[in-house]
Length: 280
Image (cartoon, rainbow, N blue to C red):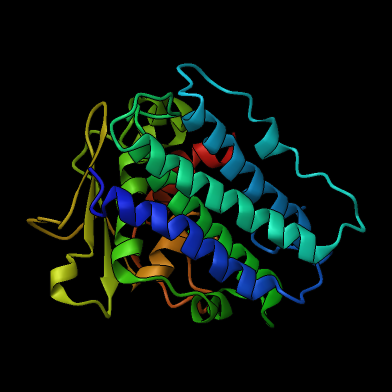
């Protein structure tokens, strides 16, 4: 269950899009995006706007089966496309999506890519999709592209970052996750755990996650209720933890501000497994 409301997620879609625009206004749209290899800033914006419109179509039409992802995957566009027009197109799509979600309401039945089946799923998913791609746009336009500069250049509200990590953990506990990441199986069924602890947050944020590796399933809980030390513990700022699970930071050192204690092989296997949907 999401820790933020449906209305908050709808609002964040447009708010995060506006923040993204503030980073790209006046930027070189042919610049590479270091955290999305092979993409330029123009292609990143095309992807985000396409994703917003794809979900808007799903919700508006009350789709009950998969809808073609062509809008999401086709990031082509005229190389000389006017950046101002592209930014306006991005804003328009975010606003249309938020309006359509609110009009449908949280209880409408629609197709979703994972368990959920209502606009609640899509509002949350698109809020965090936009957050992470805002980070990508920031890294494409900010001086310095190393892990340390990424931590310093990207911030997100604590409650939104916690909700984003909750969503990631939920996806990581789906049965399909294990089928996509066979490398994690060598670590399962032996009482191993991963712990993710945010630093610099208020205690009431409960920004502390524990992932368990059972015989046949990955589980998670927040706040963590660890009886002993975890097999691997990851500590860092909330925004850094979010970037880490999304593959925007390396799992080891490099001045990223993330501290990893314990079996880094397990962390790498878990990240590879739970991130399968990013590669599809």
